Amino acid sequence: MAKEKKVYQRKNIVARIYSIQDGLTEVQKVDFIRIKSERYNLMIMEDYMPTLGELRGDLTVEAEGKTFRWENVNGFYIHQNNLFRFMLREERTEEAI
Image 1: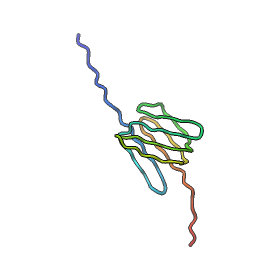
Image 2: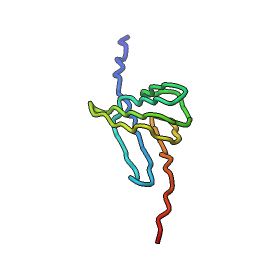
Image 3: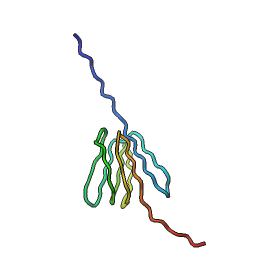
Image 4: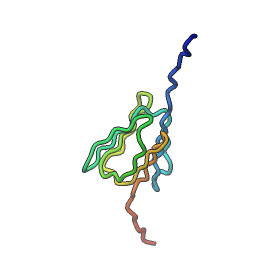
C-alpha cells in the first residue's frame, strides 16, 4: 500500500495594528512578530499558542523581507488563530477652540 505524501502548506499570519491617529494597518504574509516589552521578549510565529498581553516597548513585524517597526509604544495585543491584533494606546490631546 502506497503512503500518501503530505505536502506542507504554509499558513499566513496576518497582523493588524489599530491606531486612532493612523487608522488600521494590516500586514499580510507575516513571517514573525517580535515583541520587546519592559518585562519580557516574545517572538510569535505561525501556529503560536494564543497569547494576550500589554506591550510597553517595541513591536517588529517581519513580512516577505520587509520590516515594520513601532518603537516606544504602549498598547494591548492578542494573537489567536494566526491573527495578531495590536491596539495602540495613544494620549488624548485637547485642542483649544
